[in-house]
Length: 371
Ligand code: GTR
Image 1 (cartoon, rainbow, N blue to C red):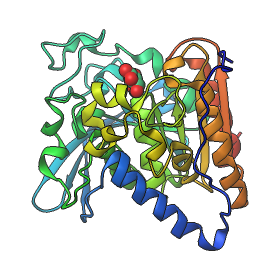
Image 2: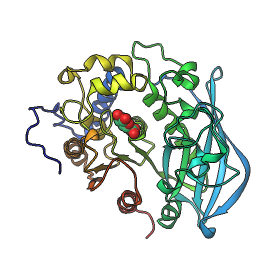
Image 3: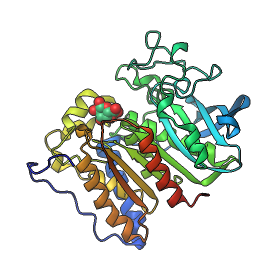
């Protein structure tokens, strides 16, 4: 563990006294506070979610999986967005699923010339682009971080969408997705994390209707900023059987009150578009936040929660992630379930195969999937 003895004193809002009888009301209160003070309100709109399969299924991983591409239109009758959804499912029948957004486009996750390229803005962070437009040269660029064969072997399918299909991750372009089309009639407008969480729930709805998916065993996973979105998605949408947060840090699994790693000031200065604007007002006054991130982890109870940290990733505050998980565990226990796990591995901020191995061990155990 990193040196931790000189941290100024801090404490978390209490989460004691939870009982099954009043859990729903308590959870709703916390979710309302997160919406109003951190992520913004998700519009209370009746969205239709219409998937359309593009092309034929392709056999992958030496016959272990079937790869499918879907275009998902999400509409409220006035505004709509279209997501390109990449599915890889075990050939052997209905499967539990891991749903995860990707940073650069579906074409970067697997090396396949037939994967649709994103049509909107894409980031330039070591992955080739044509001036912030998706490039053929990026096909398969990040496939090392997506161990599809390992997932299939463990009995899991994988569903992924490019995060920018929902809301591009840039303050100047974020409005080109759903945020530009729908803002709730609220003084707490949603930001990109709220939009990404909403997109994840839409994907879950698509999967839950499929015969080749075990609808009760859909888990949402995310690394870093996408881990923040995964937690917010799972907290709000109890159709998810669980969540895996990988080094989600500030605004994710680590407490805002703990004066270690990324602060509210740092994150809202660099990424103002992620949160509801009012969150920035807590810079330097984190103690006044009416919630903290352990309550987000608790709001997932009694469903499965797995938090991954890395020792060298001090910006995400691995100790804080652990302490928040431990605090949330008390709530999960109070509800009679302790499907909560945490690991800390050596090394930097990343999602290597080593993390996936631990994640799949946890999920196989707690989702009761085949051996
Ligand atoms: C950092 C940011 C973190 C984390 C990370 C990531 O720059 O400060 O909150 O989300 O990006 O998403 O890779």
